[in-house]
Length: 279
Image (cartoon, rainbow, N blue to C red; front, side, top):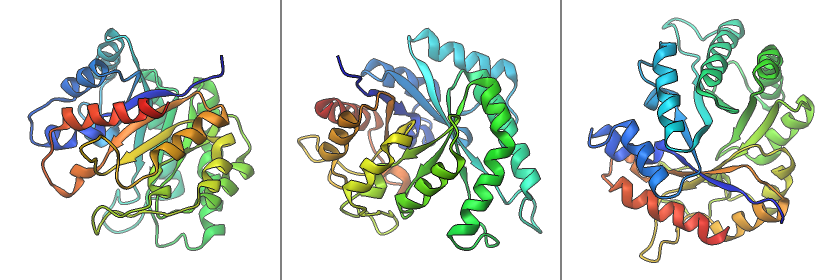
């Protein structure tokens, strides 16, 4: 039997209910598992207890809770913040320190994919400078990644075009590094004015598959039949299957981000069912 992708849930999808305190992070995790999620993805600022200074006890308690439900945390999404001081951007050394700490948290949580979103900088202009800085950061943390058997995944997210991070992956050329394509790059319709879409050709999705270690199945809106209206789900998931990818696809609903209220449970179930329909 050929390998098959597995379905995970990003707890980010429950933002409408978590931010209104109708659900806790634990409630959302439990619901995700109850509707068939095979893995859990958490976002540091939103879901980690006592962020940015969680205790090992809190992290182990969260890990034990997730594993008690019969699943594991499969991706830890973080942010490498440049604005740690009011008068200047973080230095490379300060950013590396943040990444070391995030990798240590990922290890305690039992996660094997770590996604650090490195926020834009006024001092990093142009593609060559972008790649140079990323390589500098990645090389500094490779020893930690190898020690803990964790892979660092750089996310390809709209409006970024896949070719840029594909260049990065080829230059790094290390088993501890990979890519995390986000469906937004291949979105065909803009849901709201502030939602950024890429409209990249599907051939570019095929091109990044050999380097893909995790996938974000972005969604903004569904119709009454449960189809997502802004991304070509059938085509993207077909490419995933045909490539032999057997990692996790995280359902990631972003429609709540503008502040509109949603029934997170209903949306999450619709989203999981959509992904499974095409798997």
